[in-house]
Image (cartoon, rainbow, N blue to C red):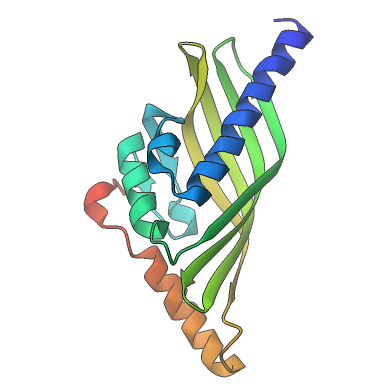
Length: 171
C-alpha cells in the first residue's frame, strides 16, 4: 500500500473513533453499535468494569452503566498511534480524557488510553477489540465538605461500577 492510501485508511480510523466519542456522549446507541464488529471484545475490567465478548453485550452494558439522562459524559480522544497491519486490519492506541457524572454532584474525571484493533469489511472500518487502561481517576464532589466528600467519592465510584448486571458480560 502506498503512503497516500495508508494515510487515507488511517484517517478513516480516526473518523471512526471520533464518531465513537460523539455517539457515546449523545447516547445514540443504534449508531454507536454500528461502529463495532459483531464479535467485538471489550476489556474494561482493570478500570472497575467488565469484559464483554459481543458488540450487543457491550452496548447493553454501557447503556446500563452510563446511559441515564442524568449521567452526562464527555469523551475526548487524541494523540492516536495507528498502525496498519494489513489492508484490512489495524491497531491503535488513543489517549483518553473522559468526564462522567456518576450521580448528581459526583463526577469522575478519567485519564488513560484505549488500546484497540480494527477490521475493515465491506469497505468500512469497525472496532474489533478495545481495552481501556487508566492512569488516573479523580472523583469530584464539590458541594460536600472534604471529609464527607472523600467517603461519598469512594462509595459513588463503587456503586457506578456495579450498575451493569453480570448476566450481560463474561468475566
